[in-house]
Image (cartoon, rainbow, N blue to C red; front, side, top):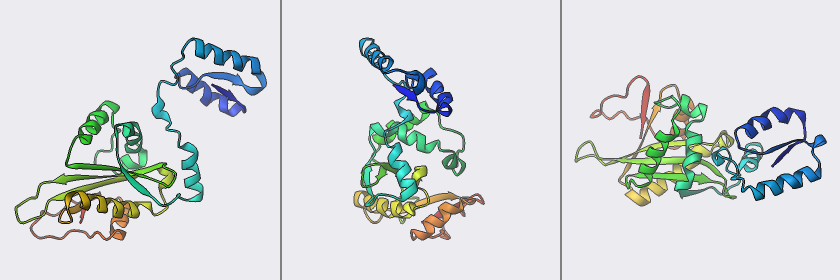
Length: 234
């Protein structure tokens, strides 16, 4: 149930009401206590199912605003992703800044993401971890996809992918996330597993992040040179 307290809230509230995300009762100056009471009674009697898209919010909005304004609540922790993280990860993946620096910049369809996500949860060669602050608020993800070695003399590799919620950017979290993720990866797959990141050449922020995390641009003579649009970090 929503009661708008300012006129500028009404257009957005009406749009959410039309999409069945909320039940808008009107502006506070025109809504009485009896109307609120009756609306609650009606919702109970009619078993209103609630918002049709709980993925629009996960209840951490206020915590994310606090993190963006005041800094992150440390210590940070990593936990394995679960089925409940599907909508959150899709939102992060479709963030415009994330898509702009992706090898596939088009938005990801929910059905495609669902198939990919569910397959990944069952894949022993994929490690998907969620970063959260001291209060449990999810701030980002790091993923390792283990690849077979190119030849018997080389170690197997784990390709890295990471992204941060908008509230967590600009706080130096990406480097910490890489270090913490590498510890988890090596605990699971052994210290001989080599971590590798493929980064678009124009993605200067990610290039700087991996450099700060101790990675180096690969110049191994036995490997084909990266394309002009990508840089391989290891």
